[in-house]
Image (cartoon, rainbow over all chains, first blue to last red; front, side, top):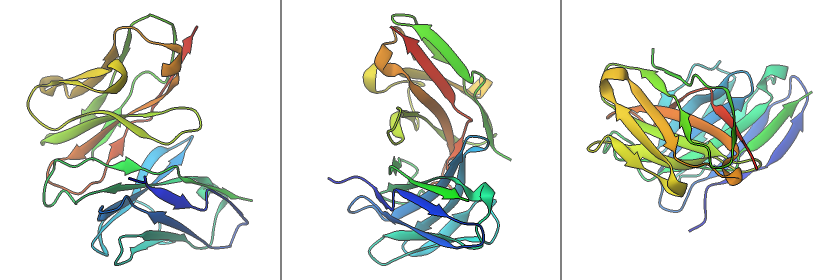
Amino acid sequence: KAGVTQTPRYLIKTRGQQVTLSCSPISGHRSVSWYQQTPGQGLQFLFEYFSETQRNKGNFPGRFSGRQFSNSRSEMNVSTLELGDSALYLCASSPRTSGISSYNEQFFGPGTRLTVL
Amino acid sequence: AQSVSQHNHHVILSEAASLELGCNYSYGGTVNLFWYVQYPGQHLQLLLKYFSGDPLVKGIKGFEAEFIKSKFSFNLRKPSVQWSDTAEYFCAVKRWGATNKLIFGTGTLLAVQP
């Protein structure tokens, strides 16, 4: 089975621009979560989607948004980029959401490295 | 608010030494616990997980962890490390029955010298 894929792998943008990152979960997985990884803040939860619905959102400004499509693929968007948005953005997929069962583990993709200049 | 503490930020060991990485969390309810590893240039991989039952869990590559509920701890151990264990290790907590949201510790960078 193919793993979680994320595109693009690397991205360079300038301040004020917007960016869209894509995540394709493992086949059959319906839950997708996004995390931001930086040297200073570590791994922080952004949001989680299941069946095209956002189930939970982390403590990030409204410039960070996401969505999930009917095929479970997910995108996240960051508008009006700031220098501090430079980070590795990780996507994780799991078969289900824990609202159904807590016996659930997540599988991470390789990430998209975003650099904001 | 939930938080996870990893007390060792950098650990340097020689091959064959024993390893113990500390992890403590703050949450009074039932939790699921995880250790993830990130090898240089690779993505996060699950080392082991605790959902319920035996508090001593075994994972891949000879790693194990013990859940001590009274101490809110989930320490990672390996009796004898290898150079290939050089990586960053993250402890993570998820609330039982809630979403898939993981709260991560700040990570421990392990360097194993040959």
